[in-house]
Image (cartoon, rainbow, N blue to C red; front, side):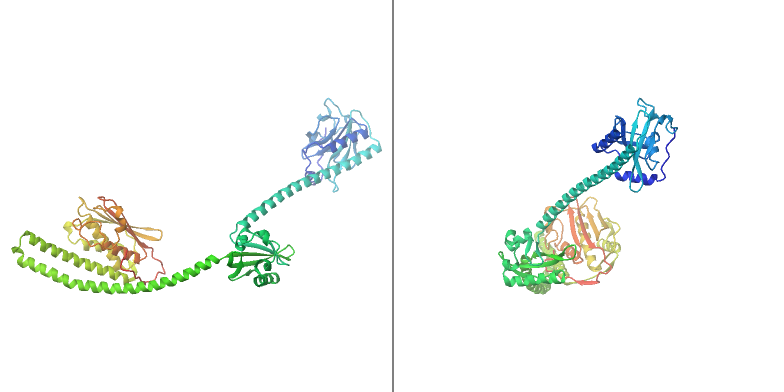
Length: 566
């Protein structure tokens, strides 16, 4: 047995075969009919339509053999030898041909002796397979039978081409159905999008300028149903004067094809006069011919009314602001005068109380000396309160002059000044503090107030301790003062930074109620914030945050506040 050669154009042949996409396709009665007709015309018991693949022979159709749509190895295929010929191929007696002696496919129960076949060849000369007839006896086909077999092979090629076109048509129909479904889905999605756009959307045909589509927002804006709008022009809906304006805009778009955007314009509708901001754009077909005009109109009636109200409110606020500024100046003058006028009689009271204590103290009983002590103490507290109040008032119009501040050195200096007597000092643990850009004098007052409070309120603790720390978080520098002293009830937190509000009595801890409001005012003047956390008997934690310095921050800015401060 000889192995069939490979055709010289094998690559092109296989490419042509695969282009028909017919290998391993279902049974087709037309091909079976051709095989039966070939066997009948040639007088043979067997016939087949075969296709030669890369390494196999596949039966597209067969008659009389009972093998159905099966395949055999290409090396054992009679047809693999036949496709090497250009015309009709015939072997009268296979048992005498050395090419087929010992071929396994010929030595089964049914021993084929005769083979005749006509090539299945494309217009480009690629032979895909064979239309063949076979017999159990040696024989020869007549010339008429050979011609009939050749004609039938052309019919097989026509059937292959038809099957290919049918499959392509089926695929095209399936693709068309898919594309149609996608188009319907896209249109439904587009319709839904247009319907749910909050602005009024409308489409006019470009010749008569009649409405062909409007969305829900357009219906609401016009106060009309869409069936009242579709097919009509602007004159029928809004009247001729208004239609002249609208259609002139449409003509500008139609003639020049620019996008048109109007300033706010008034439209009279069933809902009354509306203020609209409209944009119109041309819509052209594939040939570039203008077919429609798309308009999008935003109803800005409410916004315009709100803008008018805002302008009116701004005018009122500006007047109030000027009045408030004048009042603040009056209060500042009054505060300065009041504190000055209070100092003189307070000094007299304190002075005479001191003289009475010095000269007549021994003549008084304990109750009298106690009264004098209360008078002196209250006068001293009152003087401190006046000083604090005056300092707080001055913060309202003091210029904040910023510079680089070494926060570490500043806190060390303040801590040393607050506790000059080393014998009774409260320990202050100082962590690393990031430098800031601020008004050093004002910031010094912040640290004085926070540290003196921490020292004062932790003074009665068994082991008093004050901790100072700092960190950078995002765009903020955060500084913290923590003590283990008396603490306060967070239920009273809203009073913490209010002027004259104290969370402890004078009998518990002395104070004027001005220190923390001063801290709050200075920190907020720097664009920062201040807050606290505490539990009664478990100390307090005060934080204040300053902005991280910007490279282009101005050196000085004026800040003015009312007298309340908090």
